[in-house]
Amino acid sequence: MMSETLHISERLSPIWRDVDGRPQMVGLPAGEFMMGENAGDKFANDTERPAHRVCIPPGLALACFPVTVGEYRRFCPDHAPGEADDLPVVRINWCDATAFCAWLTEQTGHGYRLPSEAEWEYACRAGSRAPFAVGDEISPVQANFLYDENGIRIGLGVRTPVGHYPPNAFGLYDFHGNVGEWVADTWHPNYLGGPEDGRAWVGTGDHRRVVRGGAWDYLPRLLRSAGRDWRPADQRADNIGFRVATRDPEIVNHQ
Image 1 (cartoon, rainbow, N blue to C red):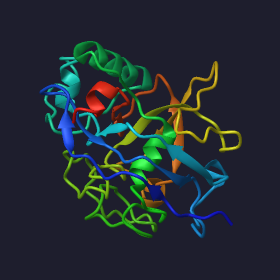
Image 2 (tube, rainbow, N blue to C red; image 1 turned 120 degrees about the vertical axis):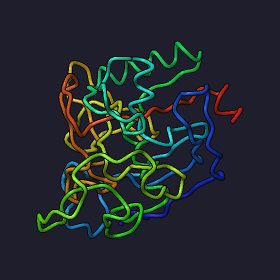
Image 3 (cartoon, rainbow, N blue to C red; image 1 turned 90 degrees about the vertical axis):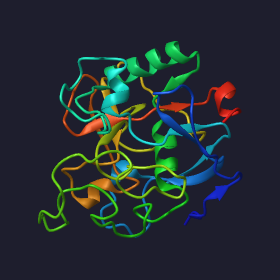
């Protein structure tokens, strides 16, 4: 069986912001990790197999939070009138999310994009090889989800403001629950032949895009670090948002 040790080569960077009113970013340490199925996880499935080693090069930064309603309104002023600025934005399809990244790049002069699926899972795990970054189980005081594994309602049943729950070991918030998150990759039903260098795995002519992280109306098994799903790129939902990433050396090196 392959080792599940995570190797991290750098210390975590502080939170920074490229321009006022834009997403707060966290520089991630370079490292390598085992992506996919956790050994002994009864909820693991073939979409998470085979577990495989992925190397994340230095220079990556991810948004501290999912993009908020207030941040998105700078791009689309009429979006979600009446919703609080600090809620994670939803009813955003994959095309909207990539358009926001292109707009943010144009506004700042720096390269923003959606994270790859591998980058997202690396950031979510934050050094953990348990099913959740917080351990083998997760509770409603650690993340926003609706049901326990018996289908009994234990959660709030609504989105919560970003940062409402504790951060993971990388200083990132809301990877488990609250809203699912679009990533850059097209859908693949397993990891056979997938890249091992952290880049997005994008097939041609596929309209399906990967969603990670689970949401406010899910049960815990769907919030696991390895859990993955897909939606059509043009689908909008009340439980899917996104966060941004960058490898722009100018901003990552001047945090």
